Amino acid sequence: MFFEPRVFQKGTPVTLNRAACSNGAGYADRVAKNVIDVFGTENGSITEINFENTLPADLSIPAGYETYALVISEDKAILYGTTERARIYAAVTLKQLCEHGELVTGRIEDTPDCTYRGYRAYLPGRNSFQLFYDTVDLLAYYKYNYLSLEVGGAMEYKRHPEINEVWREYAKDTHRYSGRTKEIQNGYGWCKNSIHTDNGEGDILTQDEVRTLVEYAKSRGLTVYPEVPTLSHCDYLCMAHPEIRERAEDDQYPDTYCPNHPDTYPLVFDVMEEIIDVFQPEIVNIGHDEFYTMCLCPRCKGKKPHDVFAEDVKKIHGWLKERGIRTAMWGEKLLPTVTAKGRTYGGAGNAATHWPEDKIYIPETYYCQYLLPRDILMFNWYYSFGLQTDFVYHTHGYEMVFGNVSVSNVKYWRERRKFGAVGGSFSNWGSYHPEYMQRNNQYYQMIFGAYAFWSDTYDDSCRAEIMKKTFSEAFRLHFGEIKGKSHILVTHTTDRKHRYFTFVDGLFIEDEVYHLGRYQVTYTDGTQASLDVKYGTNISNQDIACCWGEHAADFNPESTLDATALSEVCYSAIPSEADGKTFYTTAYENPHPEKTVASVEYISESDATVEVLAVKYQ
Image (tube, rainbow, N blue to C red; front, side, top):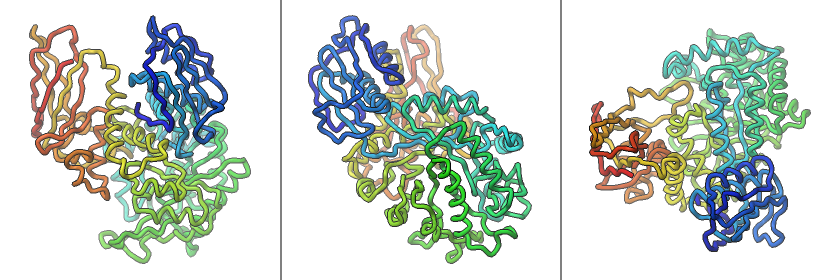
């Protein structure tokens, strides 16, 4: 099993009876019934799966809201948990035991190390609901407890349909070709927010459709809440209402509103009221990241940027608090981040230390760390700058979560947990399509993060071991359905190398760029079939260090380049080392399992060299 529970007392192997019954309720019961259907046999010994709304009296670990236990005997499995969420965790653990062939008599007790284990994503497009549901089911399977969905312009606003009308045209413009969004973002003489028109795949979901998505996730034990970009990332508001924009210059794509315009907050709160009605949330993330355009309009000119920022946060925070809702936000503008080379980020601006290669002026805002309400939940996506970022939040009493997190890249994880980080949230700024999910490191981050969020012993020394387990688990997750079916395993590598980047903000996976060639499978009766070889999907570069093998010592933990590029293939391939190179084992379902394979030959269709180490037919 991928997880390592705090208590796992193993006895003798047992099997489920196909006629076994379950007395659970909700999603936990559905998981249990699925386990029976998939893994039950005619002569299995376990005939009952019982749920208990308590914990065992002799529990040996600290009991909490999410603590669960399983007690398995020769004829019965008892799943314990005081909450529906805990019982879901018990049920998916039973499923994991069966999938890994580890169903034994004995006892499991477990409780998470982190109270916040989250995922941040966009609303899916209307044609991608099932992909969204599949992702939510995976979050439940790996025992996550929070889901944040950015709303922006992708949900209908009954009071302000003009927002949706402009949003749809804006999305159509930015998706005309890959990279169009980057042209807009980087095409002006000032910094602009990244563009989020991938949200909803550029379409508008009805409020009832969004309710359905939210309820689905809640039924899987997730606390679901909206991200409502305010102040910055407000192109969805400012393009429909350019009168509230902060920048007066000729900007076709305004993204920051003026906090002192009389029409701003009536619009913001109208939008929020509709979103709150749909989500019924405990928390709202109000954004405020990448705030670059400030104090330029006549109403704001001469004011201090940190005061303008703080007043905006406090106004929205107060409005939410009146409704019993907690405020969360991205917190980099509180950080006076300066690197050893003198480059400034976050709230440090570049008022004192201009970047020599660009002349863009960004004022300081870090003083706002002293000015905001302390009950705000802060998302620290600047964790890679070091421990000092954490302490800005801890010193002032803010609760802090690592945001946009890839746990394997968090240095001093255990120490930072002890200092007060309550957990982490990884992010999807792109599509739910499996190829995009893989290449954007979603499966890698989900699985690796799940391990660390639950383990009270994970630290930096475990990194290589858990990374290796993550690749194996992701491969099993992807190709588990072909186990027992006829398939072809190929171990290969290439000298092609692409600079790694994520396919978000209007960047698309273009097949013609990454297609290298194909395997031509020839059968003894002369039939042929083709299997695609695609860089970043089922093969990668031979010189990327494996990070756990003989080249692990060469891996630079200060750089995410090798780790991120390697984990791009996590889900469709498992890396290994041979002859001083990194190879990638991938699987293809045999197109003609009824036939006998005579040969498998690689046919190059690019200028890349592909080296094949091994081919196996199963």
